Length: 79
Image (cartoon, rainbow, N blue to C red; front, side, top):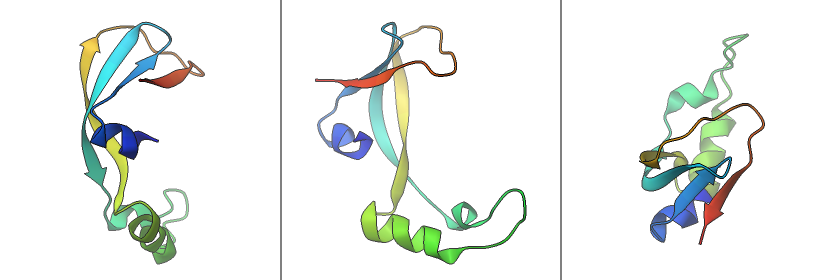
């Protein structure tokens, strides 16, 4: 997964052209508990993220090789 990839300083590739270096994990905040359509709060979401994802759910990355990204493009981690 992306969190393990960050620890190993790996890159991800999208559509066999764009390459991004995984620079830093992204911690989550209380906003992840709010449904954008109903504004209903579900604190269990953040509890799950902290219990199962070390409080992180995304990444920050830097472009290594620019490219075009479209919906449904394949994304994979390079070894």
